Amino acid sequence: MKLALVIPNYNHHIAIEKTLTDLAQYQLPCYLVDDGSDEQTRYVLQALADKFSWVTLIQHPYNRGKGAAVMSGLRQAYRDGFSHALQVDADGQHNLADIPLMLSTSEQHPAALISGQPQYDESVPKGRLYGRYITHFWVWIETLSFDIQDSMCGFRVYPLAATEQLFSQQALGERMDFDIEVMVKLHWQGTAVVHVPTKVIYPEDGISHFQGVRDNVRISWMHTKLFFGMLARLPRIITKQNQTAQSLQTTQHWSAISERGSFWGIKFLAQCYRFGGHWLCRAVMYPVICYFFLTGKTARDASLGFLQRVQQQQPNHPELNNPVNWRDSLKHFFTFGNAALDRIDAWCDRINLAQVDFNDRHILANQVASGRGAVLIVSHLGNMELCRAISIHQQKVKVNVMVLTQHAENFNKVLQQLNPQSSLNLIHVNELDPSTAMLLQQKIEQGEIVVIAADRTSSSSQGRVSYLPFLGQEAAFPQGPFILASLLDCPVYTLFCIRQQGRYQVHVEHLSDTLKGPRTGRTARLADAMTQYSQRLAHFAQLAPMQWFNFFDFWRKDELVTRNNQPSQSSAAPLPSQDR
Image (tube, one colour):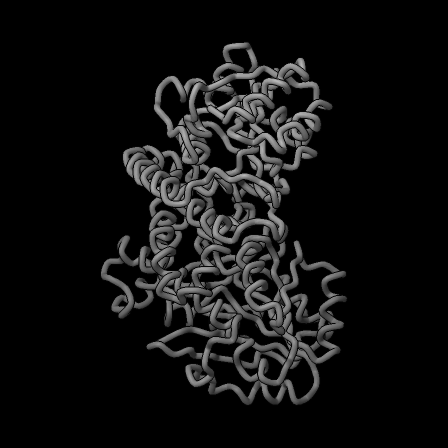
């Protein structure tokens, strides 16, 4: 890899000498582009070019814009035989100590565009920060992926052959729209994007050339053109993503496929919730859900398969068309999105208890009053978070939720930021092992509630599943949650919460005083508990099929799927589901 530096400069005469001095240690040729600066800056830049022999000064006779300056530097570096170019801004915002990491990442991914992913301190102007969220949203739509986490950072390593190919075929914006447009179009061209976290500061004496009205209009027009450019590529993009999904569907266990959606995308949705409530969230969320529906063949097929099974059990189900079609599946996806808003409501204590029908309240109330902890066996149906909005939350009882995979890590992280005072504790574990049992035993002894979802196997549960009748065919249920409940030696309940006619229906049923007992009969005892649970799950799944959020083939034999614990980076992974 043969690399050069490119630094665009327009009237930055204060910080540029320090920037070049700090860069000298890397011993890299540098193209310093003077984009029509004033006389004082031109004098400083010429003096610096004379001082540093490794600096080549390129001068524009008049100011053309940052994008034009970067393009001049990149194209000159390519003509001079360099394979890569590291773009650095001249105003001192970038952490030059991250250059070795940028370069090593580029060596590992020589065909990729390496981009800094800003980590801001308090110096960042809030207007600039919130503006970035809007741009991130549009870039995700324009690329139909979350591959680009930040498109506005000017700290990048460009693969020059791919970049020159783009420059020779298309005209790009030459001002503040350049950084965004070049990244999106390189992505369209097939160039991978790899992000490297980097600290970014806004110096007190820094000079910004961002022109509020003009540049915002320019960027808005650019996004309009990119959006229609995406529409022209839509059939090709969807076909490619569906082919990838089809391949994953036959080779990977569901838990090996990574969550779709980025932390910043979910955080942006949370900010919409803060400022605009449900209506703003839906305005932002529904187009994204449509994208997931179009590109998520695995999840779409699984949704249709599940809804068809429900209809086979109940041919005249009021929530389903006869026969079930794509409209039912799309409704299923939208219900998932609305359920995410319900989860936020529950987490932030915005659900009025008058909206909750909880006829079994006395069961848990008596358990809590006894001072002894208990296990609640739940599922990915409805709104499990409501368990903290009912009486156990009012009595300040600690609720511990087992999270057996990282599939909802981003969503959970944002929830905890929305309400740091939550009494709901998320316990992330890879599998149920002795150390987990010891931790939970302490919780039970302290009178706390442990919540475990029992309707998903994990990639580590091979050989530890039971196949039980479920909606007309045997499905795999994990033994782990019930084995763990037996080790904890405490009362076990099932809990289901669904929403019907605008109200939340909470159902708690006693499963066992304890699943612990003599070794003789242990298998039959656990099998009986699992059968009771699967039957109740089938009942509620048929009662509210749109609220069961397992978007994968629930009936596929686990042993027929290749286990792969490394998350896929494909953007065609299944829709993120409630991971409890």
